[in-house]
Image (tube, rainbow, N blue to C red; front, side):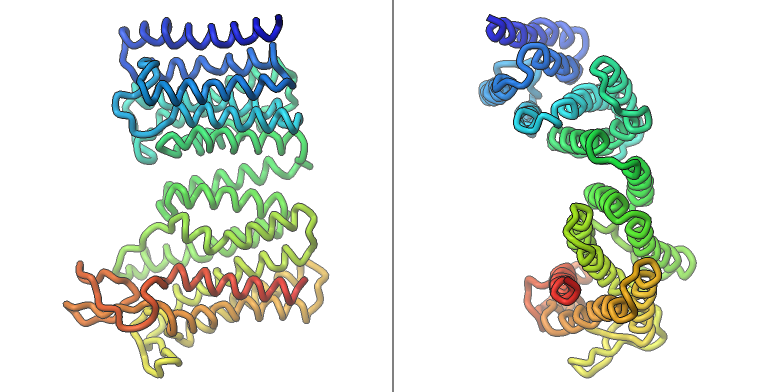
Amino acid sequence: MTTLLGYACILGYIFLMIFALGPVIQRLSDLEVSRKAIHISLFAVWLLIDLFFRDSIHQIIVPVLFILFNSLSRRFRIFKSVERERDDHPGTVYFAVAVTLILTLAYFVPSFYYPSGVAVFCLTFGDGFAALVGHLVPSRKLYENKTAAGFLAGFAASALSLLVFCRVYSVPLSLWQLLSVALVGAVFELTGRGLDNFTIVFSTLLLSWLYLFADQGSLLPSVAVALAVFALVFFSRAITYYGALLALCMVVIFSFCGGGYGLGFLLGTYFTIFLISLFKKKVLRLPGKERARDLRQIAINGGLGTLLMLLYGLGCGFWCLEAAVVAVGGCFVDSLSSDLGILSPRPPYDFFRQQRVEPGLSGGMSLLGTLAAALGAGAIALSMGLCFPIGPARALAIGGLIFAQTLLDTALGSLIQAKYRCPDCGTLSDHRIHCGREGRLVSGLGRVDNNMVNLLSSLAITLTAILVLK
């Protein structure tokens, strides 16, 4: 009887919102306001599931039914008060899928139950008010169609709703933890095309779970620093939005798992490159426009190291931290060599082609760039030796592996990276398009660009480091 009453209350509430509240709001305002009002009201579904179905299989069945309903509605436009006229993405289906996934996880792993409520509240209140205010209040765009007003509204709505949620259910999140969860949800809400239904849910679910069950007091400072880094690199346009999101996750993992050394190492390497680029642009006023680093570049430069640092945090051994330092350090000194090498008074020399090449062309080496790479590798090795009891030989091995990536990257850049001859000016370039026209492939493999070379060299050196250091 209780089960039937639970389904009646939940389904009755949903249909009341869609067929009664939705059309009224749509007549008073417009379809988008109606959609978001219903979106916000769905927080009560979690409350009803908690009241009737907690720890039962029905907490999975209910959102699965909504996947079915929303899929049919999107296909046949049944619930017109929640469907956009321009059906650009299945956001309503994504919403139901995301909720189903986290409630399924909470069913099999009960410690995720209250974090699932945190995630649902951030999704309904945060995402709902962000879109609603962003639609009604004109303000500066932050990313695609997401606005500053919507961002602030989403953060405030999430924070206030979580404050009430934590008080009612006695969830032991501190005020600062609660605010950081709300802010992380607002940052991930900037994701577009309906994917924010997933990014908000899983980022806030994981963060709140870590606060409740895995934090030893260092996670909140890690998240605070990561959010500050995200703001700096995103608003300075040094990194694209998705690249900045990955950078945020990397900072949290390096800080939380690697402690003060992990955080200092990661920030030191990144901001050295950032400051050199800024110096070249603002002080030396070198020609050319530097493009923001994107998700792929951030993943290549930091993905392996972040995975290894996470393994270290999970207790897989100190060699994971050493290999993570090699992985990130190798990419760092390679970038350092390229950024400073271009300032050399003499053109770089390609040892495999046995000729001087244009500055910036892959495969060339300069004395300044090589010296910068050696000094960078040495500084990292020294920091490891001073901070950890690893001995001079092991520190020297770490420094040597880091420097070796620059040499390997240069060799691959010369031997296999695609190079094109511009049909207009005759310049040899790493880029297929030059002077607005497609160049002729004269050497290397057509599918191998600079990102591929960086990935291959990083993989080779990191795997070598694992074999040597483990």
